[in-house]
Length: 158
Image (cartoon, rainbow, N blue to C red):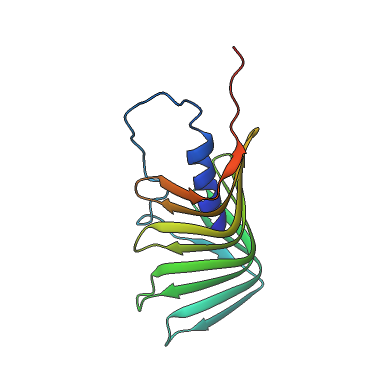
């Protein structure tokens, strides 16, 4: 999940090299309503009554083009059970559509369609990269908000 967030943020920030004004339009970064989240881990602990689970040990989450790797992921689900919240920790690496992201922690709220990376985020795509203290991505609108940002955006040679 963290990878998804990181990738999404990087794609949004690094793919916009033009600073000319234009009408903003974006497709959703992740269609949270379609498709399952595939998981892989060394260990799974589930508390059915509480609607929660913990995946540990080389955890891999995949949904569409998003792939997230980290040591630990906490999940919350409803009685169906449908996943509605996830938190990855212990150092998250995410890749999506050519964007690579890293952060200590990521939280995904599927009901609000918001992904938040925290604790020092680094996103890269090609030669471009950004670092931020925190990055929030609205998945439905592809709107990204980051704080304490620095980085490099490549400019084509004339």
